[in-house]
Amino acid sequence: MEHIAIIGSGFCGTALAIQLLRNARGPLRLSLINRSGRLARGLAYGTRSASHILNVPAERMSLFPDQPSDFLDFARRQMPEAKPGDFLPRRFYGDYLQDRLGHAIAEAAPGVRFSSLCQHVLELSEHGDHLRLLLDDGQPLESRKVIIATGNFAPATPSPLKTLEHDPRYLRDPWTPGALEAIPAGASVLLLGTGLTMYDMALALQDQGHQGPLQALSRRALLPQAHRDNASHPRLPELPASFLGEMGLNQRLRKLRTLIRQAAQDGHDWRDLIAALRPVTPQLWQALDDTERGRFLRHLQPYWDVHRHRAAPPVAQRIRDLRESGQLSVQAGRVMAATTAPDGIALQIQRRGASQATTQRFDFLINCTGPCTNLRTVREPLLCGLLKRGVIHQDTQGLGLDTDADYRLLDAQGVAHPNLHLLSPMLRARHWEATAVPELRGHAARLAQLLLA
Ligand SMILES: Cc1cc2nc3c(=O)[nH]c(=O)nc-3n(C[C@H](O)[C@H](O)[C@H](O)COP(=O)(O)OP(=O)(O)OC[C@H]3O[C@@H](n4cnc5c(N)ncnc54)[C@H](O)[C@@H]3O)c2cc1C
Image 1 (spheres, protein in one colour):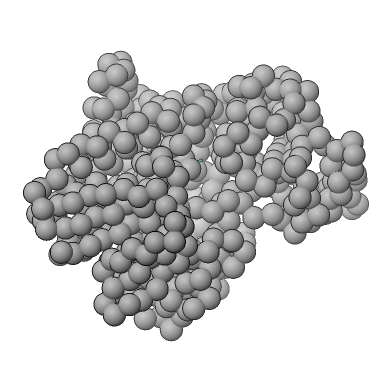
Image 2: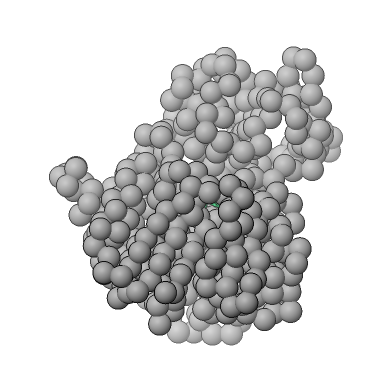
């Protein structure tokens, strides 16, 4: 019997399992392995905070590309007044994933056997035409096909902060459950990074009654833009074919600005243009050579990120309120050095435009720099082992892993492994846009088709 093992049951692993269970006509054995017992949650939807809300409207969060209203229909069973443009709690989205996984298991065709394992996969090796997984209970699990769906990695410690690595007042991974509980209400806190992770942390601190000053710091102090308060999905402008033609990065940027100005005259918001770009982003990314990709990442990515990864309107409003109250300040600058002292963490901060660094003291520092994509610095035994043996290969820009068009992982020589696949935001190396549900669900559906073919 064909055996498929999926490592990781966050959004990607769960979406793929559901697609396989729905479409397999049997016989098939499917194993879904997750290191924590909580299936169908992962980092994003495992939060228990009601303040952590989806940054994509309900009407675009369906698990299924061919059933766009599925999440909204699910939501309306519990919240009859839910609207397509609503931004609902992320933990509720986790309930949805769990529900759909439960249904898919119950309704799978005869001959389709599903099992879930609460295990950390430590190693993967080849044995004939099978792959052998080493689980943390010491047991092996053999499978012909394996999908790596292990998600994002915790933020890396920036080099000037290495001195803080053993200081409990430095929170390297803000997603560690209960991490913020150690912070007393009156403490001064530096939030390093000014993206959506910083927003989540500032709101979580506010929810636990934090009164002390919060300072957010990043090189440019760019903040995520807000989604507009849209009651329903806007009509998207058409991108002219000429925009998709061959051209350099600067020329495309100029053209995009012109298109945004023109679209504004037709009553469109700049956000509609960014949304219209989304389906063709992988095509544009793949047309860039390595040098242009490097230039994009150095100069444009911070601007792309704040326009593309926007905050839900209520979240953006709460952040504005926190700033207006004076509790949260946002600064542009860089941490140059850090030392730990009995009365706090002393940071040498060079403000943008200043010629010298000044010292500032904080009680706590939360690393909000976002997921680490450089796998050379990640301490994850499974991927480290595979990288070391050259079975998988990191892309030259350090964004993720190299894959072919069929999600097969490429080795150090660029050869695709016939039975080892990737489904995770690490697909950004090939697609760039592989972060959120609207893209990842499409990848899950296509990969399921390929695996069942
Ligand atoms: C905080 C946050 C909020 C987001 N909000 C939204 C949003 O509102 N809308 C949207 O569209 N997108 C959002 N995203 C983006 C997107 O939905 C997620 O990145 C997506 O959920 C990724 O899913 P994943 O399965 O790849 O990773 P994860 O959800 O992180 O799941 C990976 C799973 O694999 C397990 N695992 C890892 N290694 C192993 C191993 N070796 N053995 C066994 N198990 C292992 C982990 O325990 C985890 O459960 C958000 C992302 C984050 C981080």
